[in-house]
Image: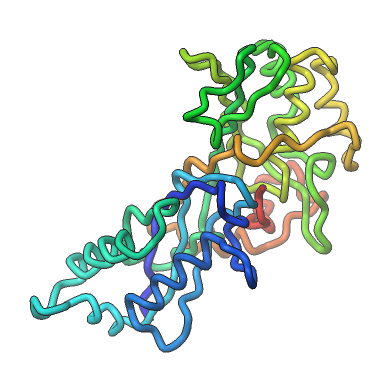
Amino acid sequence: MLRLRLDLAYDGTDFSGWARQPGRRTVQGEIELALTRILRLGEPAALTVAGRTDAGVHARGQVAHVDVPAGSLAELDGNRGPLDVDERLSALVRRLGGILPQDVRVHRVSVASEGFDARFSAMFRRYAYRVCDTAGGVDPLRRHEVVWHSRPLDLDAMNEAARRLVGEHDFAAFCKKREGATTIRELQRLEWTREADGVLVAAVVADAFCHSMVRALVGSLLAAGDGRRPVEWPGQVLTRAVRDSGVHVAPAHGLCLEEVGYPAADELAARAAATRRVRTLSALGDAASALGDAALQDE
């Protein structure tokens, strides 16, 4: 078997999220079907992804891997005679471009380094959330990626509130709890900027995210930014470590997975092994603690 890394992007508007679901159109389902068809696989392709996005969420820097029989790449040789591996992978990208719908693109396919796991080897995931607070609403050409907020937002207040959330914490107050899954995460960066066109962009970076975590964090910060809540409120919610009904999850279409970061090739296997170990509350502050269940679905 040969492990392939896929670097891809998609517009999540018309997808029921990443994960394959019977009777629903999903990103995973579309790509797996295309790979199975192109490589004429005996068994359906099975993708493993860095971050499983929910319905409506986009991705610009998504990463996945798939294990296929090494001999299956010969299906890409065509009438030109045997190709080398790089030529076959380039041909695969072109074939995927011809088969996949326009709202999902595979930009690159490569042979994965030894020990690589798209999900467990990741060091961080970087998301962006985009909000417009102009009186007239969102540029209609960006309506699928930017959320309109009807009240003016104070950038400084949002960043002051955000600083209280950065670090390693139990984010149970901002997550949909899943049986047997930890809600402890290391939020490495949460910062808002306002771009020249007036759109506010939150850069959100963590080792991993719980389900709905990013959009819940954004929802709490929007409340602080428009004056409905004091800047201390998101931090107070965090310390209570229980789901707060006052936190409204922000709409899905403002969120985009921008980047997934991985360690050097010789550290991939060790990173994957560490990630699989479950982080516990008792491990907080312990530099040797394991990362934990890092690949829970985000958004």
